[in-house]
Amino acid sequence: MNPDLPNTPREELEAGLTALLLGELPAQEATALREIVAKDARLGELHERLKRAIELVREANAIAA
Image (cartoon, rainbow, N blue to C red; front, side, top):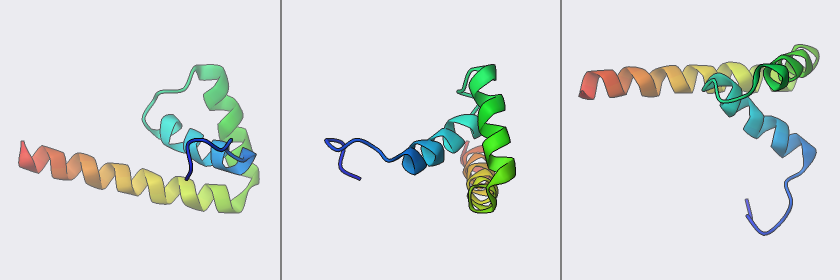
């Protein structure tokens, strides 16, 4: 991803998923994104993969600590 180029709306949604899973979105934005994910199977799949990846990172971090 080139930081000099504007992100596509899809890229913005995908980035928002990470923020959602990390609890970094305001409640209103989180609700709106959850509604979009519920209607988009590909985003739903990405949401699940990112969720699992974050869980694995947290588990690895706990073991290493």
